[in-house]
Amino acid sequence: MTTRLSKVAKFAGVSEATVSRVLHDKAGIGAATRDSVLTALDVLGYQRPFKHRSEMARLVGLVLPDLHNPIFPAYAEAMAGALFRQGLVPVLCTRTSDGVSEAHYIEMLLARQVAGIVFVAASYADAGPEQTAALRRRKLPVILINPADENPDVPRVGVDDAVAVDLSLAHLQALGHRRIGVVAGPAGHVPSDRKVAEFLARVNGPARRLVARTLFTMEGGQAATTRLLADGATAVVCASDALALGAVRAARRQGLDVPRDLSVIGFDDSAYMPYTDPPLTTVRQPIETIGAAAVASLVAQIEGRKVGLDEQLYDPELIVRDSTGPALNRG
Image (cartoon, rainbow, N blue to C red; front, top):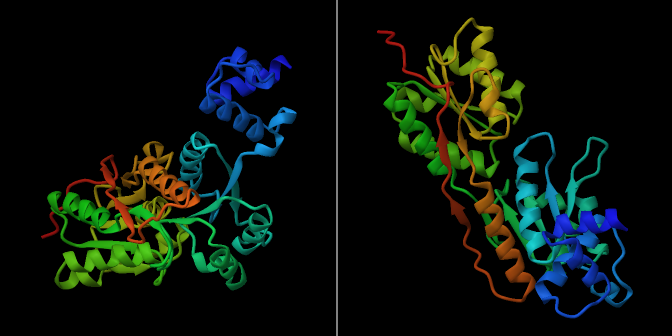
């Protein structure tokens, strides 16, 4: 019992005495405090007091593409706290190598009468036509974060990809780079398309040819950067940190130094980028801000309030480390 009180108190941010008073339905406990304790019981898998078992906290599905990219667990962590503060319990759903897809999770979440669903960096279409139809039919609250495809009729929130490219180009141009390339994800992936469109709007002449599309892997980044190096690129702007690490590998495979011979900029600023060799210059997504905005939109929908369908975009921040440097004078 003491262990349970301690765990629940720590999770709810209250004293063990307060938890005990809630469990024994004592007077003098505010509604918000009581709800926090009861939600903590739900999250930690403890049974509620009999009187409150019909008040189970509502569940919210968090659908992620995978857990290999550190940016996705970071989003899940940010939203989990925000959801908890609203009395909502997150249910993590991610595609697996043995074939469990978004469609499977949607079926599961709908069967459990969830209050809403957050899709992170996924294709809404991947939910499957039947599941998507069911979501619309039930008018289940949904919010998309950095969606992979266009969904003008669904609330969306994300990072401003055009600003990310502008920050990167301004930094590299200030270092004297003129032959700057971009390594982006596959055509049709909306965030990549936006980055490429902004890149093409900002550069002229031969630089417009320095665009490479690939899969979001280190191997893809390596192959794409190898092509750009052959075309004379002295710097590359990458659409993810994994692509950027592949770019560094491509340079080293050719005996080149980063940043002396090639400057590399990533995107996301995932957890380990300060510790790579060299530490990676990258564009940081405002994860906490975007997560909070997504939860606010979802809660508004759950409460029956109308939310706008205009996409909410938030500015990223350029984090300068050691993978970028002055362009060499190659005459």
